[in-house]
Length: 187
Ligand code: CTP
Ligand code: CA
Image 1 (cartoon, rainbow, N blue to C red):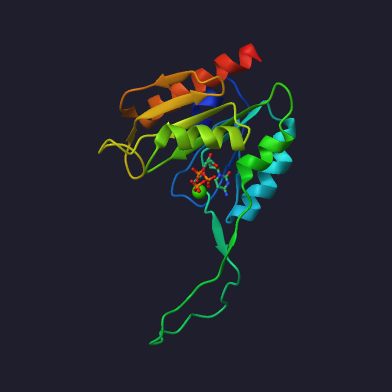
Image 2: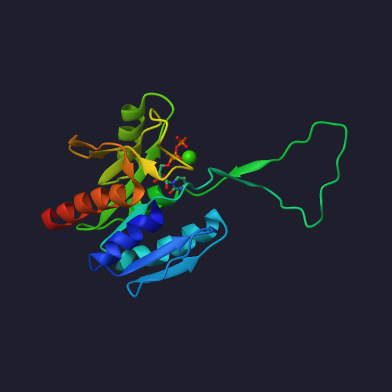
């Protein structure tokens, strides 16, 4: 979704900074500058330094909530006992941008929930100081990860909801970008 949104924004004339974790996707567009990262910490640093000069940010990465406390340099050998990996919380990148967001800047988040979808999405919208949140539906067979189609609901801060049908991710990106452009005009 991130790559589709970056492309759609760039096609609409935006200068895009795409902060991306490792992926098989490639992208080449005169309006897109890509910053490659390999950890949540790196994504946090890159996003925090880029955001102040931007009109908005779209947080579409499925960032891990936790990272291992220590990483092994050598292969971990098999043993008979249970094996426990200690995890520490990763920074919440969206919430951090929400804290430094200035008047006129737009912050967009995503949510994929297994229960109480809209209530949980709305809570995240508030907690992270987002302007709108894109709720990915898990109700459909053709939606979510590993599919080329998605069904989304966009929830705005004022409670306005935009429901969309199941469609290809490039068209979903266009729907999201349209709401963004509309909102930027109103800001
Ligand atoms: N997000 C983020 N940094 C993280 C985790 C999530 O910026 N370390 C962003 C995601 O990119 C998304 C939004 O926060 O735009 C919601 O992510 P989600 O995983 O649904 O929410 P969490 O706050 O992590 O809550 P939980 O996983 O407990 O539902
Ligand atoms: Ca999470």
